Length: 123
Image (cartoon, rainbow, N blue to C red; front, side):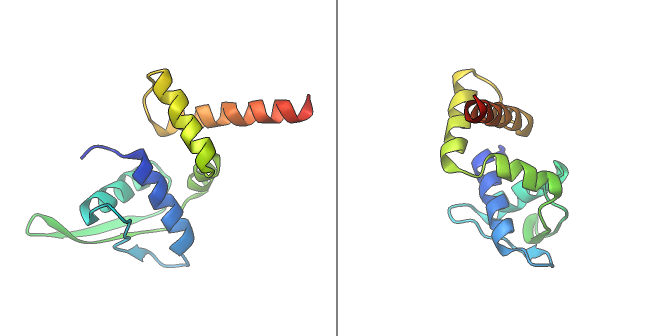
């Protein structure tokens, strides 16, 4: 399955909205299948952006999955891409330079934008 950074962003927002203190079961994201959401929750866990991930399979299909809370690093990442205007600008800059759409590149591009904004405020 191909990684979808838009879906990763939507998942982080959904966890932020829905998580209280127990894992979220079978998180639903409109327009995406259970398999797509579960896979992206799994890779967000592997990237250290969510605390836990668990799944159950039967008949070669996912039957159930649960995802935990957003980690500190997950919150830091989400805060750098929270505003739609910033997210769209980040994607545009990455595409225009033919850079890979990875968490590290997204974070660095977002951080550079934040530094520029801070410079403008204090100049």
